[in-house]
Amino acid sequence: MKLLHKDIEKDNAGQVTLVPEEAEDMWHTYNLLQVGDSLRASTIRKVQTESPTGSVGSSRVRTTLTLCVETIDFDTQACQLRVKGTNIEENQYVKMGAYHTIELELNRKFTLAKKNWDSVVLDRIDQACDPTQRADVAAVVMQEGLANLVLVTPAMTLLRAKVEVTIPRKRKGSCTQHDKGLEKFYEAVMQAILRHINFDVVKCILVASPGYVKDQFTTYLFNEAVRQDNKILQENRPKFMLVHSSSGHKYSLKEVLSDPTVTNRLSDTKRISLKSSLRAHSSPNFNA
Image 1 (tube, rainbow, N blue to C red):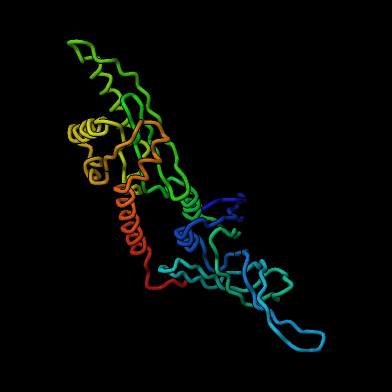
Image 2 (cartoon, rainbow, N blue to C red):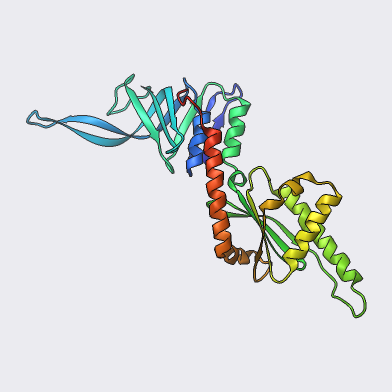
C-alpha cells in the first residue's frame, strides 16, 4: 500500500489518499472502511444516451465518484472489494443521492474521509504502508568480515544492515586473534538478525556465502541460541536455509534468489503463507 496524502485535523477528522498495490492491500482497506465514511475513487458507470433522432442507447464511462458508504463486501477468495453507497458530490453522470457500487482496483488511488480517525485505524495504515511488513523473506549474504542483511518484498529488496568487521589473518602456530575476530563478526551478524528480522512476518531466512562461512555462522548462531536460552532463534530454526553465493556483497543476492532450490522453497513458502492468510481473514459475514 502506498500513502499519497494524509490530512488529519486535531479533532481527528480528515482524509487519506492511498494506492493498493497488491491483493492483501484490499484486506487492509476492508478493515479501514466503515459505514458512514466518505469514499472517493475512479469507477465505471453505465449511462443512458439519447441521439438527436430520439433513440436511446447506453454506454459505460469511467468517472470519479464520492460515496457515503452504506455496505462493504469483501471476497476473500478473489480479494475483491466492493463498496456501495449514495453519491454525495455533483457529477455529470450520476445524480446526487443516487446509489452506486465502487469496486476498488489495484494501482488506482482512492481517498477515504472519516469524521473520526482512531489510533487503531491509523496504526493499520502505518502497518499497511510499511514495506517491511510485506517482507516474508530475509537474506544474510556473507563472507568473512562482511555481511549484508536484506529483506525481500514482492516489489523490492531492502538493505536493513551491513556488518563489517576486520578479521586478523591466521598466523603460523596461532589462530587465536583470527578466531576472536570471527566470533566478534558472528556476534554482530546475530544481533543484526535479532534487531531487523520480524519472525512473525518472515517465513524464510536465507544464509548465503562462499565456502563454509554460512555453515560456521549458523553453528555459532544456534549454539549461542541454546547458551543464551534464546527461544525466538530456537523456535525459528526451521526457517533458516543455507545457500551458496559467490561473495558477501549485496549483488550476490540475485544469484541466490535464482537458485532452483531457493525458488522452490520460496514458492512453497508463498503457498503456505497465502493459505494461512486466507484462513486468518475468513469471516462468515463480509458485509459491514
